[in-house]
Length: 165
Image 1 (cartoon, rainbow, N blue to C red):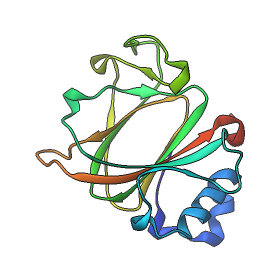
Image 2 (image 1 turned 30 degrees about the vertical axis):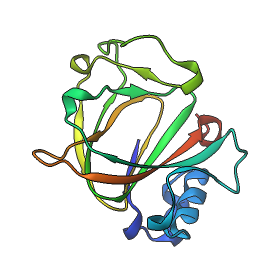
Image 3 (image 1 turned 60 degrees about the vertical axis):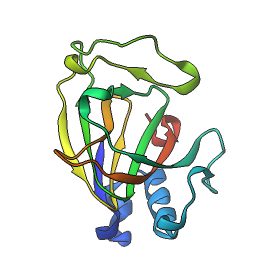
Image 4 (image 1 turned 135 degrees about the vertical axis):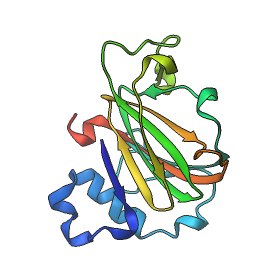
């Protein structure tokens, strides 16, 4: 798992900090007018279509109790807030986490029972990002306490082969 802030990154030091594909993605995102990206799926010009893409979403945050933690086996999620604010929760996968339903292979997603996951929380604001790797259960789109927000976010799906995991 990686947490960062796109607006404060020193591009000259990225190579020493992040895996090569994450550096390329960050450089690419820095070149875009993020607020002008329309909702929907967008390609990454330097990655094969099935190995990585960008999904832009706009939604209203929700109370934690209405959401489910999830993880992915084949893709990692780099989630970047474009506008608005939300809380994200994360936990490292352990044997206490209880599956909620079957793994959905076509979506590469496994949900978990909320009560079975020991979550840590972080409030995310514009240009903040998290990279959730396969060993990290995560839950996003959560209201910041006592506040619901409209959020525009992009999610970069990165095949784990590109991360070397």
